[in-house]
Image (tube, rainbow, N blue to C red):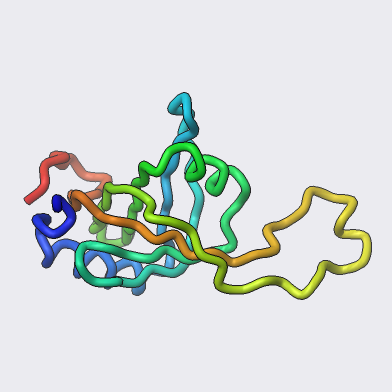
Length: 139
C-alpha cells in the first residue's frame, strides 16, 4: 500500500504543523475535474498513513467527494514559509456534530453548513509546500 511507503516523518510534521497553524486547505474536484478549495481547522493522524480533516464543510466539498475521492490537503505556515501537501483519497466522511437549529429567518438566506464532518483520508504522498521555489518530489 502506497500510503505506508511514504515518508512517515514528513507526514508527522505535516499533521503537527496543521494542528499548530489551525488552517488546513482541502482541494477536491468534481467528476469533470473542476477544482474546489475549502478551509478546515482540524487535522489528526489516524495511523497507518491516514489522517482526518474536520470542519463544517461546504456543500461543494461534499458533492465532489461523492463522485471523485481524490484529495489534496495543504498545511502551510506563511510566516516561516514552511508547509506540506498531502495527496491521496477520501475513505469516507463521518458526521461529528449537528447544529441545533438556525436563528429565526436564517433559513430564507443561503443555508450555512449544519453538520460538522470529518473526512477520512488515505495519504499516498507527502511533498513540501512553500511560496519559495520547490520541487513536487516526495523526499
